[in-house]
Length: 263
Picture (cartoon, rainbow, N blue to C red):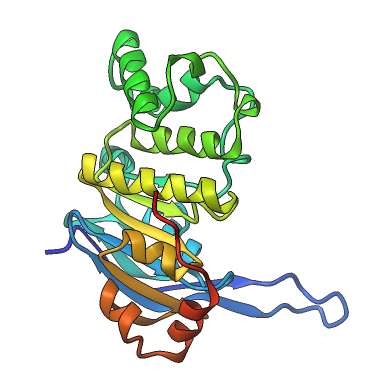
């Protein structure tokens, strides 16, 4: 049985009302989307901006409520969970955000940022929280000197490392990485992708990796799902999708972006 299973998800947004006509249009961000992810698997979700990728990631984590459909995580109904059950899901399901500049509170030190999830969930003593924070800093390639510093003192790539450390400090079983390299230059982005690949193996993570770049996703994913206008138009093993894409939109994505340089 899959670790995470979404079935027939629908999410519609209303655009701003037209001031002349007094009515707005409906945009279906998710249009009957189903997806399952096995434990230990990385699924890459690709598509252009506005295709519904980030909406799907947030619905899976219940950061956004869908209009209809279901999400199950390890046999638990995510959309109906509440109280202690929901808090347990929050520990097990985390997100790495797209924007390394806007996703970190500028008023908090790095130590406060990374340890905050442990405080929220009431786990660990003060000493153990500090130890785990240090462990995660080192795991993402930073050291103890970062603890007392603030986000504005770091580069974009370093901030994204801090965001990854925050997402992993509770040792979640599933993470959504929502375009984590799109705000970074190519060389720094390649470093972050390599870091995520290593951490996925080290922490035995199950991951949904969202990107607009098929070559980047190819480097990380076991399977690839291609989204267009709120629908998954193609889904398959990574090498099958790359070598013999069936959908014209997949072929367009594959041709549109350069290969990721490993290193």
